[in-house]
Image (tube, rainbow, N blue to C red; front, side, top):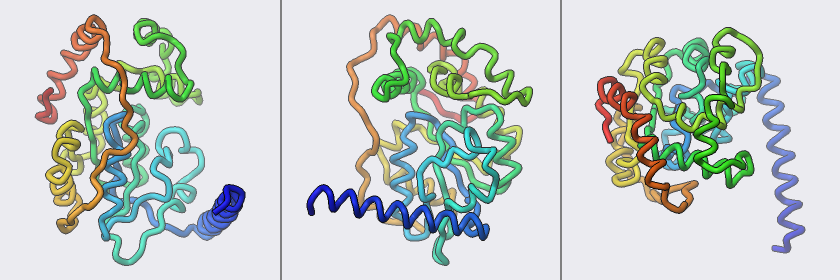
Length: 274
């Protein structure tokens, strides 16, 4: 097919989808999810979302990251509901917005909207996660500093933003989201916040590394957690992975030291240890 025809087809398809979405929102169609993949950023959430989308009893969100509970909350619950188009056979309705594990207001918001939702948390070794986070923003043009400079300036770039969010101030949360390379990896603090709203049996904690090493084992565990029948997933290739040069040993050691106390607390909370 000529490139011009492909573009025209895509344009028409997007127009039709837009009108369908607008109609669904107008008439409050759709269904709220009963499961969320809440994090972590650069922890394999795209792969997990795509894997689960193969299951015949799972309805995935029209787009992977609606980001309703962090940056789109002002749009209202009808906007959020309209992104889910389940059929009768869909037992689980799910989305994946990996930033909400880190967002300080997300646990309360999720509890207010979908208090019975099951929450899946994929956690990646925090040093590797931090560097992958940084390289991802470099690739997208959000970051221009060296990794060392970005770590040195993290505190000043994100100073007081979390406290202001918790005070209810309307601020741009993107600097906090984008530049908290170390902050995102302090998992224990984030999980304690979620556990103050949700019972432990509504949360499933996974090591990202184990999910990629043994995806079928991880998916069997997830299916049991979600109450889904076992399924022979066919495509288990990783999604959205990038290859980077190795991290400088001194920075590796610096980050390992930064995460040591948090990792100890995480083990007490979840049993996860790297």
